[in-house]
Image (cartoon, rainbow, N blue to C red; front, side):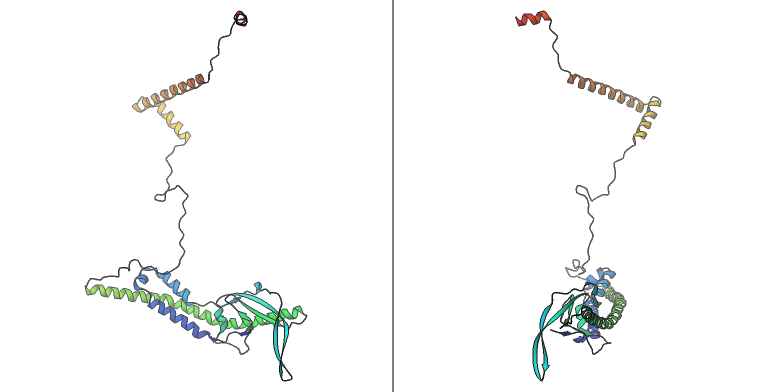
Length: 297
């Protein structure tokens, strides 16, 4: 079924509806949440809701399914005749909002492009009853795409103007709304009566979907305190310190050091002796030849 593009509505009116929805969303935003949320986050979400995205044809990713046949009706001598013809189809993906293909921009033309189908992410155009000339068929497909691009160019200009207005106006709208809420809160506080807040006022969160990056710690480590290495002394520094203590006059610290060194040497000798004696095996004394002969007889 053939669908004519850019005929089902007015693009300007649709963009105005989007702008009004942004203002309505800000006006109905929960006051506590709006005052607690970072102003930049509120602006980002409202801008994201208010802007439009004009489709961009991905012509370099177009592809063709297998040939098919379709029924064509035409008039012949005053009668409606049907016949089966070959149909070649080109599938063209696109980025952006498919609804833009259905809306008419301020600049337009009566000779509008046609497609055989339009989905959320691709459109299909066709050449019916093609001749046996590949270059001619390719040229027909390119001509249809060029016409669609021309209409999208008009729509894109209007959408870019709308998006620029949204990005410019939303920050001021948010600032004014927050200032209004703060002024009302301050006025209420000056009246003098106790203010009772809703029980859920402190638990309300702003519905902004933003990814949070959490630190990843290796297993077995503590995340409470930063890592601090153990104090250590290089071997060269340690030996130099010992040399200074050895050559220093007699002091309680020097005596303690020499006592520890003598104890370490004696313990080392003892350990070496016990280790060597542990490895010794008892060897019986050699017997004389006379004793061996007596044992044999």
